[in-house]
Amino acid sequence: MKKSLTMLLSLMFVTSALLTGCGGNNKATTKEEGTNAPAKTETTANSEPFEMTLRHTQVGADKQKRLAILQDVVGKIESEIPGLTFELDGVESDVNRKEKLRGEMAAGQPPDIFDLFGSPDSKIYAKEGKLLDLTPILDELGIKDKFSSLDPYTYEGKVYGLPIGGSGEGFFYNKEYYKSKGWKAPTTFAELEQQLADIKADGKVALAGASKAGWVPLMLANHLWSRYAGPDVTSKFVTGEAKWTDANVVQAFAKYKEWVDKGYFKKGELGFEYAEYTTQFTSGEAILLYDGTWKSSVFKAGQSGEGMIGKVGFFNIPAVEGGAGDQTALMRDVNNGYGFSATAADDKRQYAAVKSFIKNLFNEEMQLRGLVEDGVLPAIKIDEAVLNKNITDDLMSEIVAVLNNSKSSFPAFDSLVQADVTTEISNIQIQSLIGGQTTPEKMGEALQKIQEEANAAVE
Image 1: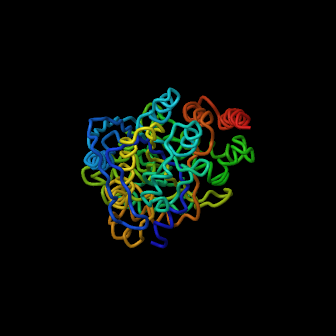
Image 2: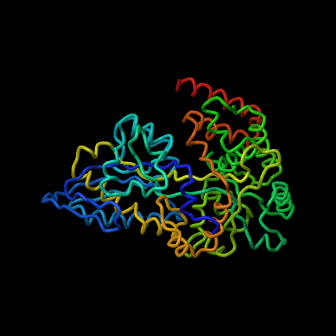
């Protein structure tokens, strides 16, 4: 690799989820700073049974390895904290973030530990006093400086959440099909578009599509408007330095709609869920799949894409002619993790469980397991030699090379704009564009109206 993955991760924009804590008095764990020694343990006589709820989003066949890692961590915590039993509550990611967790926070009854999106969610909940301050725990365990970045989880100088892993976004492609055509991964935007046209003419689906949940098509759309208008444009919507109605932003919407109109996506995609998105690619029906690097876990033994092992490649969107800013930039973040309820501070036994959770999940062993078994990039700093030794998967090596070849990155749009703007584009505008109920120009106007209202509310 031209650069170390450690350097790569240090460049990432972080937007992850927080850890919901519950204090405990059964065992308090400590670790000497700067050592790799296991945490010391203080036991107490109290072994009365108690239960904690752990909300996770590792649901579905393709997340079983991620769930297995979490279950192993839970087993270690329960063995360290006498009387503790975890209730694992699995909820689909979008439902957890946008429905259940928002309602639970409003009612003041979040789970004890929960999957939490980093920015802006973590800072909103921290400001409301709903999240446990993790700073003392990180200091005690000596791991605060081990993370690539904690910015998205930091509010007024205190840390309220921890990222579980990192990711980037780009195109997975069917190498076997490309080889049959004598193609390589495209190096220009014109070449990419010619390949899309040729795949369609060949009777294949060029791009996997599943837009029932707006975040799925918005991965690609976000990258397109960041190509046309610049990787920093989304952050400028919030400050008013840029508008959704700007010509280059609208041009990106128009390009996405053009690809829809040309039939590059599977017909009927507005009715397809994310699981179908993956199946279109693993079945060989679709030749290209725009997704996060986490998708690499599907192409491993025992997973749904096992039949494509060795037949999948990965590339970044090529430069757009006349596009603004760094044309190698891609979306990178460490947006997913865990959060803890602030009520943990009032219960010593739950607080001890929180420390045990952090100690047992956020360490090199578990981060490497996430990388090797599930394709999740580490959120903590790991020596380059150790990383190189553990990355034996050809697809992951290719992904890392693509990430290292990008000169900069940008965070996903929903970590930058306000919730109302995210709702408007995710639940209304992108589907309306795909379905032909709006135009790129009207989409920009509708988003800008909501953006200006959201900006004014902040002021």
